[in-house]
Length: 221
Image (cartoon, rainbow, N blue to C red; front, side):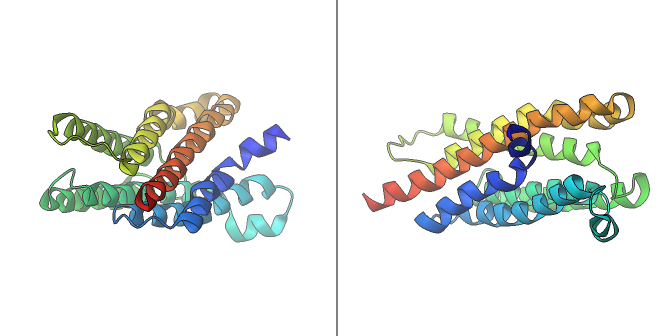
């Protein structure tokens, strides 16, 4: 039972903050990219887990969806771009730098999947690049908070979201960095260590849920 819960955690974990959002409906502008990401994450994680769980049991799943590596790579790219949009709304970097970074990353992904590796294989390079970019943005966010002279006494949803993201990316970065190598040498260990990723993802979603819930509670007071 616990094994099934962990295996499907990438799907049901996204439902927690989405449910909170539907019930609470926070109005902050910077919440929008996060909610869009969660909707996309739910769909992609469903497309990731269904082939994995039923690939050898239901032949039609194998013929329609194939392996789930494509969806993992797509999820990584979408997560990075939507959360970069989130940081842009928080004005962590200037609009010019945000657009320049966006174009550079888009070019990197196009070059990677056209010339360096097929998109239907798990791309440690893509996930590692995602981790580097988002961890740097999290650090810039925290530095901006530390340098700010403004005294914040109210609830700040962005702090919870960024903290959850920083925990997730910091925990998963070494997994993403060495996952290709692990799959080649010790596939069983690579599969089992993905549980660490799933637990970190649950924590990330719980932080987002707390942010969405606490944000509305403050606006109602």
